[in-house]
Amino acid sequence: MKKIDYTSLRPTDWLPTSVKEMRACGWESVDVVLFSGDAYVDHPSFGAAVIGRVLEAAGYKVAIVPQPNWQDDLRDFRKFGVPRLFFGVSAGAMDSMVNHYTANRRRRSDDAYTPDGRHGARPDYPTIVYTKILRELFPDTPIVAGGIEASLRRLSHYDYWQDALRPSILLDSGADMLLYGMGEHNTVELARRLDAGERIADITDLPQSVVLRPAAEMPAESGEHDIVLNSWEVCQRDRRAQSANFKHIEQQSNSMDGGATLWQAYGDRSVKVLPMLPAMTRGEIDAAFDLPFTRLPHPRYKGKRIPAYEMIRHSVNLHRGCFGGCAFCTISAHQGKFIASRSPESILREAEQVTRMPDFKGYISDLGGPSANMYAMGGRDREICRRCRKPSCLHPVVCPNLNTDHSPLLDIYHRVDALPGVKKSFIGSGVRYDLSMHQSGDRRADEASRRYNEELITSHVSGRLKVAPEHTEDCVLEVMRKPSFELFGQFKDIFDRVNHKHGLRQQLIPYFISSHPGCHEIDMAELAVKTKALDFRLEQVQDFTPTPMTVASEIYYSGVHPYTGKPVYTATRPAEKLAQRKYFFWYDRTYKVDIERSLHRLHRPDLIRKLFAR
Image (cartoon, rainbow, N blue to C red; front, side, top):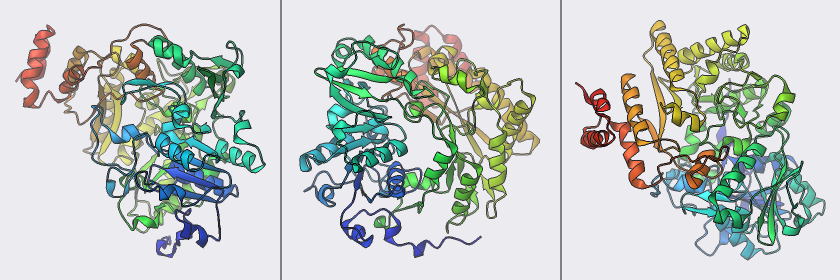
């Protein structure tokens, strides 16, 4: 198969990032200018590239300003002048505060979305910073916020880094509109309506958008098509009111048909959140992934390494959405829980493009998605799904209406592995073993699940398979919306048995979280004992970090569960969090005396013997 000659690519094969490149395209001006906190990588895993390419395919002239300098004379913000339609602003593919800070609020020394991984190329909260600059420079031009940071801050939210409740980012930034979730459809529709002469202030009915309206427009009470949330002022006074709001926000985000319109009052104004669009059809998601991406960073970076790109350059994303509903995860709030799966033909076209890259050595790094093994899955009876508001199809038990057949996914693996030039395809995304181990009673589907586990272990692991039990104690796992740790033990038995059968020496690498809501210090001690018994010395661990629009963050802030109103203990003080984290490293002699002292205080000398007995 002929390799792609990337040396033949011209700067005009990317969206323009400078006036010189714009003029090389034959343009004197542009319709839309996109500002991004990330470097510009023309790849379907980078949001700004996707939105730019989708607008381009719809016939619009689009320029991108990646990582503009906000500290000089602001020339990056001025260079394209006034776009014909609007400015688009995104913080990037990650929330800027997660990107910048650790769980201990310490500044990170690198940035995976910046050339050479250097830090300092974007401010904290770029959505706010960029928008305010543009509003000052171009007061009459529409400004539209989007991306992860804006999407998850579309209503009042707890900000861990400020340790404060914040209003909708629409108010903090001053943008005219916010487009949340995956933005292909709503962005193009907005461009078309502005192109047709509508004023952005008059566009108040665009699906999957957030707009500011006079408080007088807000319904007096909730009805069939509208939900009136507790106001910003009430939430500031009462943390339980903020918690109660979240239940509605999550349920509507996970509605099959978009759900109701959400309203929240802010003094004499209200934030109006239009319902989420349904999951993309197969044809729609294929069209987005089949756009003419170069799959490369822009030439302006002159070959500098962009770490986030290095991770995915030889990977292929199979689907969007996740129905796991984990309490600490934001995927469904942004992508929804209903799976949008690409066609096998679209996946194979992209895989073939990967094999033609000059640096491809025969190994596809990931055939995955938000959760690796949810491809082509969904409810058997869609009417049941249409009525459902549950955030998870897997917790507390696997929904009996869920089709858990792994056959379509196995077919993708086989067809990709059969491509000329592919030696092996790996699964780097997280695998839901509770899904692959589920016994549905359908003999064909259950046999496909058995084959999936075996083929995954024998053919798609690069020496280490990473899975995420997250904790060992049922009381914590219940809050996390994760399955019992016993199921992980059963999966480990399968993993060990398959390795022995095929003469493999692979490792199972589990992920765990400390200080999650519902987790006490004694729960971490039990975790240490149980993982030691399984012969693990943990590597992939993290302290819980509250991020906007998750159940766990609302519990952290309010102290109560949004669905029950009952108190849930959470370690919030640094000393409490460190007291939990140390149990991950029981095998390090540095922690031995402190752990022994703590377990005596907790009246559990039996755990000392289990951890440190010779």
